[in-house]
Image (cartoon, rainbow, N blue to C red; front, side):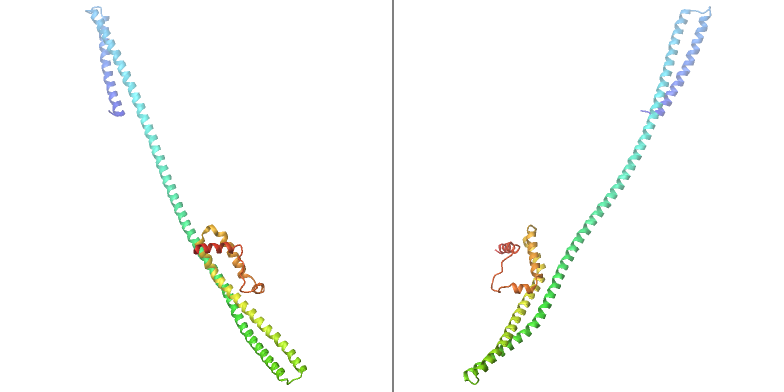
Length: 303
C-alpha cells in the first residue's frame, strides 16, 4: 500500500488526465453543437444522440475529478494527522524518557538511603556492643576499685589486729602471773589478809585490761573478716550477675535486680553495725525476699 504522498501524487496525475479528457470531450461537444446549429447537417438525430453521450461522459469526468480531489483532501488530512500523532508520540517518548530518568534518579537516591540506613544500623550495633563492653568494664573496674578499698581497709585492720593480739597475750600473761603470785602468797601465808585483799584489788584493773584487749581483738578480727567478705563480694558481683543472667534468662530480671540491690546494700552497709547486730557466727541468717526465690531457683538448676 503506497504512502500518503505517493497516493496524492498518483491522484493528481489522474486528475490531470481526467481534465485533459474533459477538454477533449468539451471540444467534441462544441463541434457537435455547431453541427446541430447548422441547418444543413446530416442525420440530426444521430448528432443529438452523440451530444447526449458526450454530455454524460463530461459529467462522469467531472465527478471523477471531484472524487479524486476529495480523496486528495482526505489523504492530506490523514497525513497531517499522522504528523500530529507522530509529534504527540515523540512528546510522549520524551516524557517517558524523562520519567525513566527521574525514576532512575529516585531509585539511586533510594539505594543510597538504604545503604546509609544499613550503615547507620551497623554503626548502631557496633556502638551498642561498645556501650555494653564499656558498661561491663566500668562495672568490673568499679567492683575492682571497691574491692581494692575494702582490701586496703582489711590490711589496716590486720596491722591493728596484731597490736591487739599482742596486747591481749601480754595482759592475759600478766593476769595469770599476778594470779599465780597471789595464790602462792595466800597458800604460804607470807602476807597478812589486808595485803592479800590489796593484791586482789590490783588484779581487777588487770582483768579489765584483759577484757578490753580481748574484746578489741575480737572486734578488729570480725571487722577484718567483714571487709574481706565485702571485698570478695565486690570483685565477684559482676561475674556472678552475668552467670545468673545466662542461666536464668530474661524472664527473671526482676528477681536478679532485687538480689543485686540487696547484695549492694550489704556491700555498702556499715560494718560496725553489722558486727554489733551479729548474734553469733553459728546462728543462721534468714534469707531476704530477693534471696530466697533465687536460692531456690539455683538449687533447682543444680539438680
